[in-house]
Image (tube, rainbow, N blue to C red; front, side, top):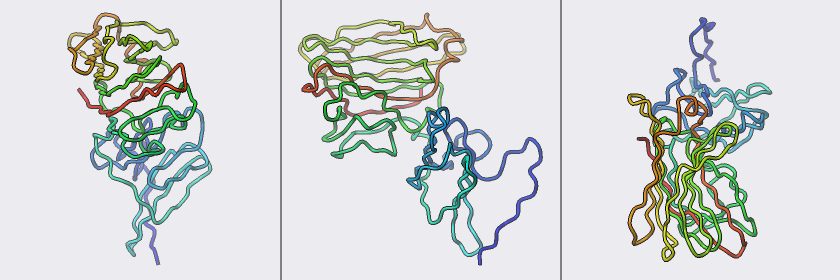
Amino acid sequence: MTKWQEFPIRPQGRPWSGINTRSGKLDDGTGQMTDSSVNVIINQADKLAKRKGFVRGLDERFAGPVCGLHKYTGNCGIEYLLVADQAGISIRQPFFIPTFTSSDAYPSDSFQDDGPVNKYYWSNIGKYEQGDGLLVLASSWLNGGDMAWFKLASNFSYQLEFEYAADGECELVGIIKSGTTARIEARVISDGVTVTGELVWTDSLGVETSLGTVGLGTTSFTGKVTMSYQRDQVSDQYIVTMDAQPTNEGLQRVQDFETLTALDDADFGQTTALRIERTLATAMPGIELVQGDPL
C-alpha cells in the first residue's frame, strides 16, 4: 500500500514543492536552472498557442500546456509523476525523465542517424530529414521553416556554430535570440555561382535590418559559421558577430556593436533554431554539425 504524504498549506510567497515550469524550462522551484533539474520539453510556442504540452520523458501530449510536474516516491519505493495541465492532474507510472544538464540549453547534434530528425531535440521537424551527418529538406519541400532546439538558452550571451553545404540556389540559416518576432540570423546565401554571408536583425515589428554582408567565394560551397550575441552591460553595448570560414579559405567577419539598444535587447527571446530554403527541389543544401555554447 502506498502512503501519500500530506503537504501543509503553502505560505504566501513560498514556491510549491516539486518542479515548476519557468518560460519553457524546468527548475527546482527557485526560478533557477541547475544541474539537478529535470529535463522535460515544454515548448514556449505550445504555451502561447494553447496547444497540448509535450512531456519528453513520457513521450506523451496532454490536454493543454503543462504547468506543473511533481515526482513522488511512495513508501513501497514506487515512483510516480504527477502532471498538471488545463484539464487537471494526471498520474503516470512507471516513467523515465533524463537528467537535465546546463549544456542541454544549447544545440549539439551531428545528424548522423538516417531518417527523421530527433523529435526530443527539435520541434517543427516535419519538413526535414537527416542522415550521414547532414540535415536536409525532405521530399519536395522548398522551405522547411524554423526548426527550434527544445530548450531555451540559459545565458543571455551565447553563440551557435554550424557547418554548411550549399547546393544550387539556397539559404542556410542559423538563428539565435529568437522570441515572438525579434531574432538574430546568420544567413549563408548561394545563387548557384557565388556564396554570400549576411547577418540580419529582425525587430519586434518584423522589420529586417542587415548588419553586414561578406563574400564567401565562388569555388567553395562548404564551410563553417559561428554567430554570437554578447550583452556587455559594462560598456552598454550589444555585440552581434558572424564569423564565416569557407573550406580552405580565410575567415570572414561581420560585427555590429552600434545598432542594437537596451530596448531592442528586451525584445529578444532565448530560442535557438535552424532553417533551410531552396529554389529547386532537386538541389540538396544541408547543415552539418551544430554546436551552441554560452559566452
